[in-house]
Image 1 (cartoon, rainbow over the protein chains, first blue to last red):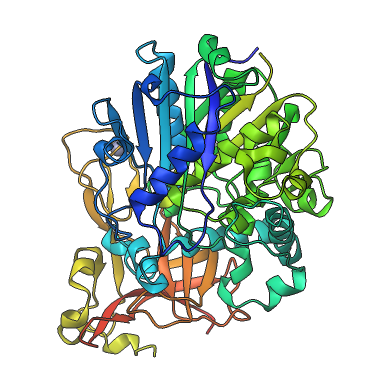
Image 2: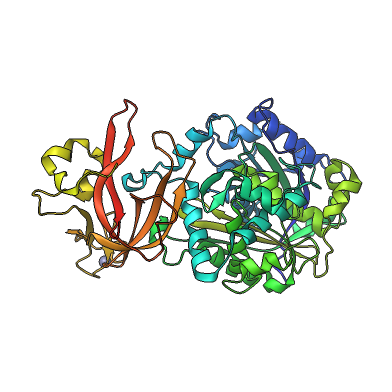
Length: 402
Length: 150
Ligand SMILES: [Zn+2]
């Protein structure tokens, strides 16, 4: 029996992409409206007693500095408590975790968590340089890629993982993204396309990488015993975990795993009282193709070193052992840091209710339906890993089982 | 691009070193010397650190870890070759993680960026070389690791 003290009763996201026509406030308002307008039995915003806004690097990305009031002030809720969360790539999922803690504490009955990030307003070269901030010994060409590409190189060296296997992750996730109307990219690619795309940071080609994307997503959560006021099909929070690791990449002993993920997953599985084999569907952090392969191992979907074979044998396909990234993942949906984790949770909410067809009414239900995973045991897993030195991970386990 | 190591004397190159890196590099003072990275060692638990630290995170004692010259040879643990560079850097360049005998892993640019020539496990040595250009186009020097065999 899972933790199940908190239930999700509504989710909403906006179409991710290059949203030059929408400023931060508009993205936030749209994600909020999509959420409150799609609660099954209707929703009165006055029920929200506290809110969390997740946005990772607003200052650096050219948005004004974000504070709690940036959210509530823009959605007519000024007056209630609201906290800004910033925690690397798991910013959105950590915002969700903190909102869950707020509700589970008994202080708040109903809470809103909203994640948003503008990432396209600055040039890529400028953005890459932001990654090099920090200790002087690291300001010598360190980027997000120099954190993950060497992991790929080492995984290939130790386990014989291939470039083809990595490309298969991109092919799978782009294929799934075609059926997600919220996705930044909606086209299929081939292994050949990945190999022919420009080399960004060897061994990673451009199509091994997720894009930079603007986006926003939100969720309304409440005490589990109050959920039926809002819906007959709530999704419960069965467990969550957050793991940290050494601050710098060079301090890590083993570059073939992300210890922060292993720690977060262990906490989450234990809290949910389940094992990796109980997961039907997962939305995991595929910032790079190699990251998803390592995630399979860190999250216990396969043994260490076998992540390459796991994708190759189709075990993470929509109809595989565990469907991984049915939404298209970060790779085709995009990775607006603060919104990413909450968008993953939104996808799992629809998947576990077997309601992807009607996900917020976006797009053609017949198209949406093509990414619906068959739910057997009733559990979904959300995962992010990243932050400075890949040192921070959040895992959330959701269930439809009461 | 690689400058003759022997010419890299403290008097000639000192002014070109990235000022922020100066506390971490011991430049050669004579043609017979080689550059070294400056790390630190905790006198209580014996752990080495690079970059050096003011307090040992394991012991958290008042005693400051002492500065120590680190071995300038190492083996390549893993690497990547950057083709999309941040502002000020010329692509392609290679980044390596280099294991040195003190049990530390050093993040460092490599002098070589030809994929066929870089191999995991290869022997490397520390040199001082150009890293990037500043806003005025002036070369900024720092440390790199160079394959011993090349
Ligand atoms: Zn110590």
